[in-house]
Length: 114
Length: 113
Image (tube, rainbow over all chains, first blue to last red; front, side):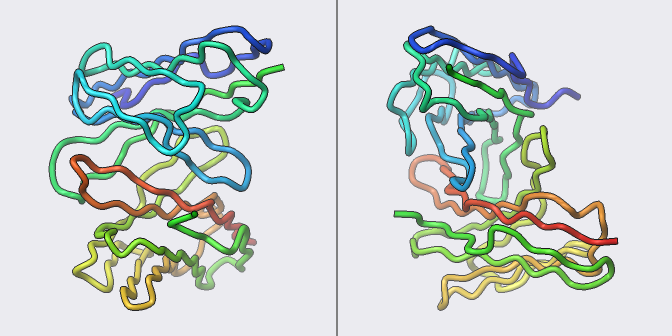
């Protein structure tokens, strides 16, 4: 059971380049999320998708776009990468239901922007 | 404005002793709280949670306590084991059309053998 799969695991970009981070889940979850983790900052929500066909901004959406391609896949796009977007990016999914459904996370994409 | 705070960046504990990790929140709308554990180069994994209608939840060696009046929760690990060495994040949520989670900055726990 793969759970949440993120690709790629590592990437180095030059400033101004574009990049799409891929995320797929096989748990039939409705909700999917993108976070970034920076030292001393914890996990900050970039965008989320409550269900297929819907997306909403989180705490730090500037410089990013997302696509909920279908129920399984939720991608994060950097149109013009900046050094401030160097971070570890985590995708998560969550099933429908009451508040006691936890999120399931992928293993992250480590992105460096030079 | 950080709604969920973990004021201790790190904690060291001897194997077999109790580890206590703390978390404070400011938003009184939060009605569900979770703890996640994270090992290096892996994603966070769910550990234990508590609803705002409870003040304690226990799962094996892990217990979470919630003090709503103080807007404070804590995670107790007894006895601590070297394999518990990880970064622990607390998170809080409430329903606002969907569930969005606010995470603390994490506490790095080191259990010394």
